[in-house]
Length: 400
Image 1 (tube, one colour):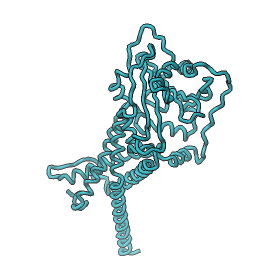
Image 2 (cartoon, rainbow, N blue to C red; image 1 turned 90 degrees about the vertical axis):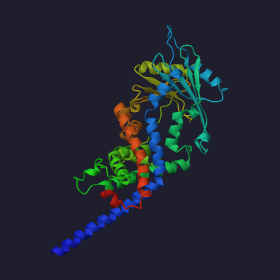
Image 3 (cartoon, one colour; image 1 turned 30 degrees about the vertical axis):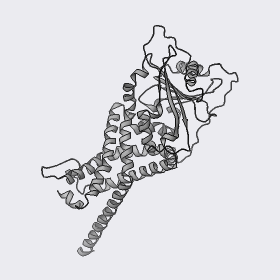
Image 4 (cartoon, one colour; image 1 turned 180 degrees about the vertical axis):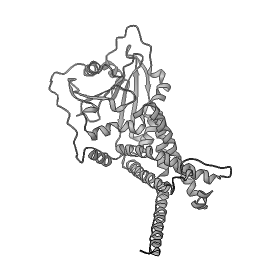
């Protein structure tokens, strides 16, 4: 092989690499313009929601805290549910009962009715109110219109763009997430420096002469690089919720190429009904797991599914919860599900919430995820301005 042949091979390789980057740059640009507004909305609402629990505990303190009497005897949970239901003329059944294991906290009972065929959050949620009780006196402390509670609205915008749970919102959100993942990958390829010594790729090296285009371009590529890996984790965990097929595929991979069906809930053996099953269930959970920080008793929308009682032994980590199934009439404990007992696919799904919101590592990772979410929200904005100012070629920007 002579020198001319080597030169031509090198020249061809360089040309192909340059052409590939040109194609990737166009893909990155047009996909960004197509999905930018959705990514921006989801990133900002996600950032707001990261500290929703902490902020709500401050804003709603008067509705969620009470003075503890000398006599700490609590009112029957069944009576509180009946009283709460009577506030709405017994038209609705409760969905969730939240019982904090702290003496000075209220018990809250929520009622929700949805219209699964409706378009728009305002139509999808037909009714959603939460009644807060003093558990010692049985008095109502506050009735919250949860449909329009700030963080519930933010969550709806984040998950469905405020369109409600329907095919339109589903496809927009899912495909925007897939597009975002492609953009993260193409962005990394486009960012990748020819030489590791290209310091401007890793941090800001602005001069007095650096113009706005230069600064905007650096903000896009440098923040894009430092957010890309956690942003990819956020996008993938988001898809675990939004896309059933993606969820199934991930669990299939985690289980070594096996589709392991969910274990069916055991059937009740007892036939004797109890007068106050909710009180019996609460007593059972408190006895079996006295270290619970709070207990959630849920009525599933499907009548055939038993009461689900969740014991949260750590308020910050969702995956540590213990889930118990109780018969609605006999209060018999049917099944207990803990993180350790689940298969790898189920474990990954249980971890998904903590991975998505950043609570997996406590307050440190929540702060990190908040910052990353804000940075993600900035990428469509800086990317748009790069395109909008496209009159100046990219090559002239990178040399300034």
